[in-house]
Length: 527
Image (cartoon, rainbow, N blue to C red; front, side, top):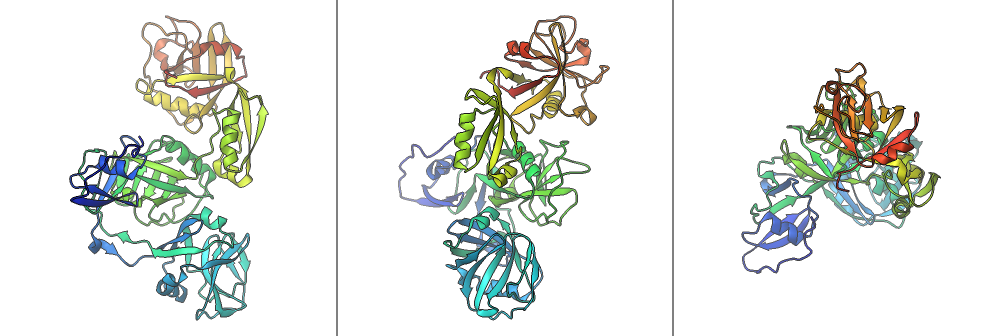
């Protein structure tokens, strides 16, 4: 719901000041959380948990290794390395002097803010740099022409740096850094103060909760996707496609969402799981679980880091099990499946991405696949191919999550509906009024199908059934175009068949023959 369209006029006597997602507002005493949301004009997802803090400065920790750098293009954050070096000391003692520095030069490999005078002792040698390292450097080995250099691509170069080398690295806002040009400047450098204790914070979704003077309110958190994890990013997009992160488990060092637990995810990015790191377990127990770190943890060969919380880490630190948190991603996912070409082209035009139509290219087509599949790859290539089919080839299905939750989970996995808006099933065999399909993936290898929601007296035309473990062949998917009081949609007896949903436009099945692909999209049944 969007608050702020019709705001009440409050009496200015006995006002309190609160902060909502960084925005300071004034309210009358005895105001509620709902009043604060209305006044601040934020978008609130109904039912989501909101964090409320009473800030106590005595809890603040001045010592920090993280700094926020606000530029004319936006903000990014850096983290100083743990080892004590002259460069690290130089940054801590002088960071306030770096406000208003301009981008002196930039290229594909690096960019430099400056110049300024320093006491750097440059080394006359080339060094190998890693992506998003930060070093002090000099122009012509002259410390009176010193720079802050950010590495954009791994390379070897001679920048007149001190012997201690890199002292920090960029941890969020990497896209901002990549887009900086010579016309850009640093507006402000400030430490990121973390709070040692969160005992004064709590979460609630009760909008009648009273707020107090000095409260800090957090309605959501934001995750910046790591460009080095394109496949893991798609898993996270699928996890939060409804805009929420559900806390199925919490510990002192992390919270976790188990929605995609059991789904395989590729290991892509070996990085420390610092506070705010979003990672997916890719091997062993709890494979597919998504974690958000509350405390710094070392890298793990079983956890691929796919992004970082850049706003709302306070909410992460106080959230409790069973909370549902509102989340946004940077960037948003590019998912064209289920859209028409015109709608897709309109969105991509704003992103400066070219779309190429394939197969059925008319405006009435529905997109059922895209290449590249991954959002990060599309941004990197600046173009995407979209495969369209006539709307008559896209079949709507209503799934019975309440009646057959485990088998529906199997079906979504088998058809890839866990990760895509449009699923695919291969037509295995057709006879008389029965259509049989095989999973796009061999889902039965690691998904059990116990009897669940088996029919009793008859199955209706359009009912979708899946053979369970009582059948000779588990995991086959079937549908009949006529009612049947003898056998299930797959041709098996009722006890061997789980009913998981129904096809809403059954007349479209007549276009299918053996070997065809059936394209399916979820529907509520009320569309």
